[in-house]
Length: 124
Image 1: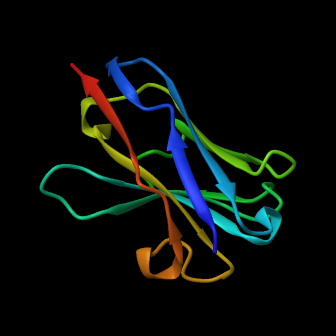
Image 2 (image 1 turned 45 degrees about the vertical axis):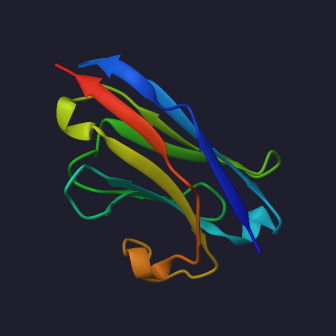
Image 3 (image 1 turned 90 degrees about the vertical axis):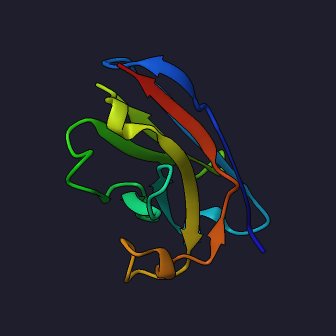
């Protein structure tokens, strides 16, 4: 069983940056593909980024590509999401997720473990 705890959310202005962290415990962190998802009010949870096991390969939603960067520190059992040039439409609760799978990594159903989420609010 893997436990995930997100942190780093907050209220920022458009154009600002934030770095989210997700600390994992209870499993072999380096064996998990890690994902970031977000859910805005009244909307479905959507894919943001995937960071593969080694951290070398990453994948992003088109809406965040070039602005967000995912990374991980396997020694610290932590995955990060650096968010730059934030926009009001990035406002959402951000969740990290973990899976042992190597496929369906852009889909919610591909992930087994989820954190509780951290709120990011971007004002215009």
